[in-house]
Image (cartoon, rainbow, N blue to C red; front, side, top):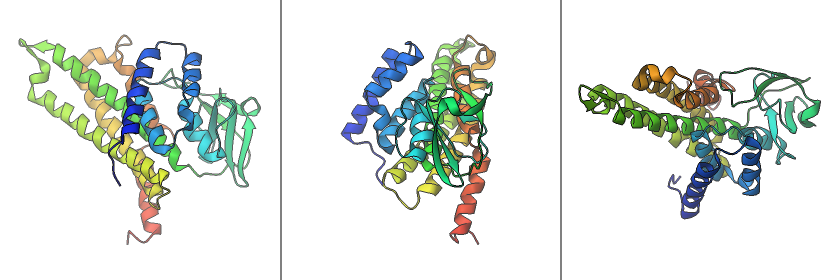
Amino acid sequence: MDFEFDEDQRLLQEMVRDTVAKSRSQPEEKLWRTYQELGWLETPPVELAIILDELGYVADPTPFLATTTWFAPLAGRLPDGSGTGVCDGAGRFVLDADRADEAALLTRDGVVVVAGAELDVEPVPVFDPTLHVAHVAAPDLAAGIPDLTLMGLAITAVGACRRILDLALAHVKRREQFGVPIGSFQAVKHKAADMHVAIERAKALAYYSALTIAEDDARRREAALMAKAAAGECQRIVFKHGYQLFGAMGYTWENDLQIYLKRAKACDLLLGGASVHRRALLEEFAQKGAVR
């Protein structure tokens, strides 16, 4: 598979970056309408990954992620408004369940779509104040997380990690000790390099997952599990080194670093961290006889 974007995909990436940069200060409701009017919710998997990558970079507060990757793959359509999906079999920590217009519930009898107002939800306070998360109580729930859902969380985490690295690089170029920028110190360079390598690895696997979904490749399940696991491992490295490079400044509310650290961490924890998906990947290989 070719990982190079074609001309249309590069133009989409540029357009998304420009649009987000110009509109990020707008109210959430206006942002959501903008995304809908531009047709971003109707994009195929690879193009959707490009959009989610850029939205992760700015810690987008809208229900775009839940609507396109939690509701749509379960319901087989876009919702009337915003949406989310319950697919873990337990209804725990469901993204945007407390504000979705529609929700797709995976049950033992198949997928059931209900109005958001009919859901029995319990909002859950989380460390990322821009995320809406809630527990959902519903009968006969079944577990079956769609590949697109895992890919969406993975590429969103990658986008947030890219922003953390960019903020850290800008800081170490400005911050001076002993009369020179701290970015000139070898230890600092090593940490930045580790962050970059982790991001590129996770990014490649996330886009590989999007490609397998787009082509309905037989490897799509393994690719989605690898992408989610790699994104979780990536955010741990980026989280640790990002804080270390900023020092005490990174712990303050006034510093933007904490916004993207929280988004990356949330994307790792939602629907299971890296270890959960590494274990699931081993089980997939074992079932196919790849592990003896």
